[in-house]
Image 1 (tube, rainbow, N blue to C red):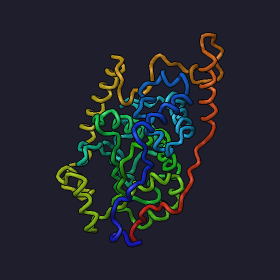
Image 2 (image 1 turned 90 degrees about the vertical axis):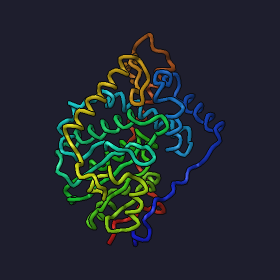
Image 3 (image 1 turned 135 degrees about the vertical axis):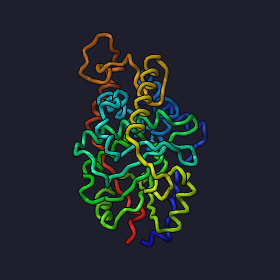
Length: 330
């Protein structure tokens, strides 16, 4: 495939519904989930449920199952409880960070540099990824729901990242943060990345694949797109921009600690925030079918049992050969 002739974003075709039809679907999802939806007002808000519906092409049963799985995952993983000190060592390598600039549409930008030597802890890498996603959502403006990923492949080799971490990254992003990705740019991947891509491709849902494109510094079309999307004075030099400072760990650490404090203030005040999905009054017994509490209603028990059952089913992404990612240049 000649990438230099095909350097453009693929338009993701979405099923469109009228506002009334969308609201009806949202109501159906809440009805399937049951009373427990009231205990998670942010995660089960109209905007959130709509993202799950879009991710499952407005199939209410599949969207409800996906949302219940996220509720269970968030209770187990506790992403809103992760603090800077928990992931500071992982962050110090600069392999992943939130940029201090937005794209020209006002979206948060997450930068990944897999070619930089990071830690060897798969658990730590996923935990830091989740921390960054939560922080990005916290900082989204009121008119934005999505973020942008920039991946720099300078120094990348097959030993830079494991297939296991790649799979877990895809699962976390697609299963628990649906419709949060606007697009991802793979910047200057080497030819050897092609074989890794073919192994990782089945992990990516077709909708995610369509949001991925490749850019190269010696490709005029790539350069034009980068200029259309980003302020080149703020974009890092390793993405073709003019910002030679790049990642500053000390400054980044302070900003993230400040955001941690903002999160804490939100929770302490009882206000709803983008990443405070859980109601503090909910306890683990409400998400388990091994509950003998007399205060628990039979309806809640049935819902919680369903959450546990859904959690046993691991996602299996189907690969659609008609939806292809632009391949690395030959």
